[in-house]
Length: 66
Image (tube, rainbow, N blue to C red; front, side, top):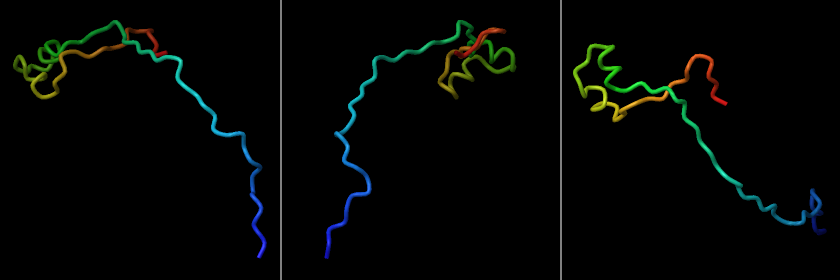
């Protein structure tokens, strides 16, 4: 019985990579939970109690994500 030959030529080994950095950005616009509660006629604290969010960031008109 003969030994099977490899289907792919041998490689030099694993390629090592590492991230150079990370970043994040948030839009300047903010909508608070109090504003949402007022707009929807909810009791103060209703929104935060259920979502645990105090504010949301929003894009201004013409602002882009990237």
